[in-house]
Amino acid sequence: MSERAAPFYCPYCGEEDLRPSEAGHGAWECADCNRAFRLSFLGLLASGIARAAAPVPREGDGGGADGS
Ligand SMILES: [Zn+2]
Image (cartoon, rainbow, N blue to C red):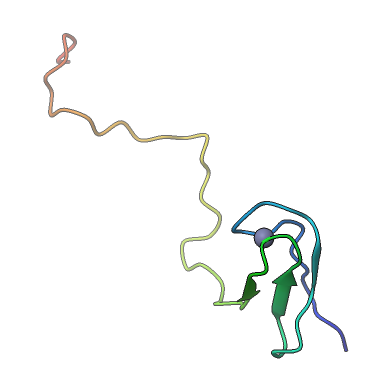
């Protein structure tokens, strides 16, 4: 059984020249920046998928012009 997820880009240099490392399961090596890293699944989020399209403005405490 092979890896379930493969990174498409190196998280350090952004290159795509990645190959599985011999360091163990989930370990990858970047041929461009010579870095080795490991990907691991931490678990599911308890709060589910967060929607980035719904920002909550928290700047200032009622200091705006429209105070209800
Ligand atoms: Zn890299």
